[in-house]
Image (cartoon, rainbow, N blue to C red; front, side, top):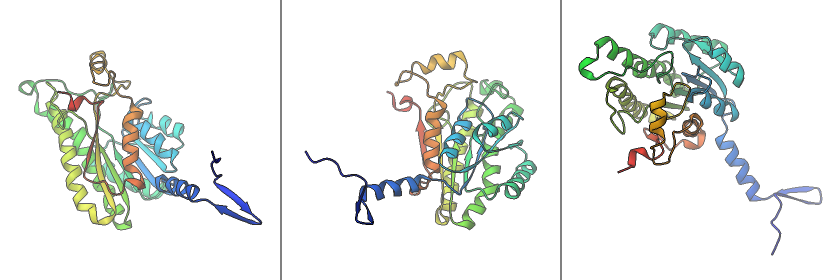
Length: 277
């Protein structure tokens, strides 16, 4: 058996690089976000999807900005070597202020992950049948889960289009997109709205070098998961709940340069639950 060739051989003073090494280098370059600025919203939890995404984007070279509604975001920013902002993303004026601050302090945003809106211990989802749901509760879920995605996208996509490159990934959910869950109508409707926004925006930006996609996680084990949720996770086809990093890996891929031919899509990350008979 012939030994495998090394990636480089030296002939006299000349170094010859074999094609396999060139291919590997090109692949690494394609997946790099070096020189890009990435914004991840809803990244305050130490064990949530947002901070997992931020870590992954930082690892491939992006300058990462993280946002949440509480000061704990500064701890996350310090952990990943990024910049943190405390912002209420349901407020139009605060989103506009965030865009100005990022432009002044960091640079123009190239990658946007709209993760804000998922339920947490500090902002639990409203679990109530439609007949018992107040309009204020309905509006709160829509504002938190859909309006935030709209406002933040609107603030940054025009700049991406003008520069001719960008990635937007919206975090939806299987609720409302793949399946229906009793007592979660407001949340499900808002997340279904996120997928509609994703598809419409993808077509508005398709000629400008900007892709827009969504990831719909199923049951993911985070710090805010309840015992009944975790018990349901054991009934998944794959036998367990998902992890934040498993959802984050799908999001990070859609942020990469190599995902440039994917737009307007919803990638479901649910351990096979959505296709089980």
